Length: 206
Image (cartoon, rainbow, N blue to C red; front, top):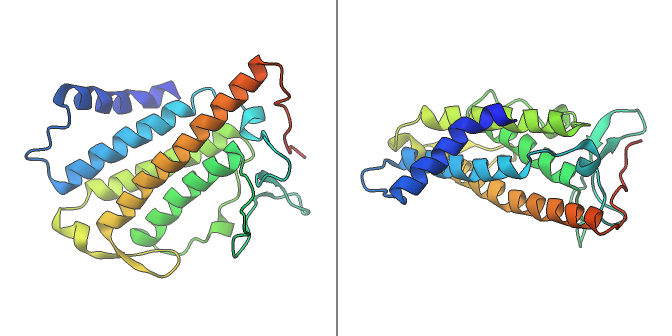
């Protein structure tokens, strides 16, 4: 993972030096700066993630990543969402972030053919992180290729709505911040539990 952190750490350096002096920044540049900073924080929260931690179930009945009856790796979902929704594992949240990046790119800037079931769930942390990076690079390239005026042009979503392009990136930045914070808290809980001698090895690895 460390080899990919250099450009992201550079974004932090620029931010700290300029203190978000946004005068003269284009809308695209501002979104790129936000995207890089939030993703860098998410990436750092994933440093050293193990497969056991990835599949750890803090409470019984978690939604997670597991094999189905046919042996394929899947992510738990239900439609409509149950009330209340089940607690989700680090693995579930990470796969969710990664898959959403791929799908938002696919429908807003790609051929618009993929569905979520086409994306096999990643059985290991490294695989999920690789998909996360793939999705991030696709979206970043999409944004870099736009002009400010193009940010207002309508784009497709996988559920059928049409959004202005800026909202695609805004949603993904917020998504990284939201679920990245959750993952960070869960990793802290896992670490503290292990240090305190609490059971932290419950995982569905069948």
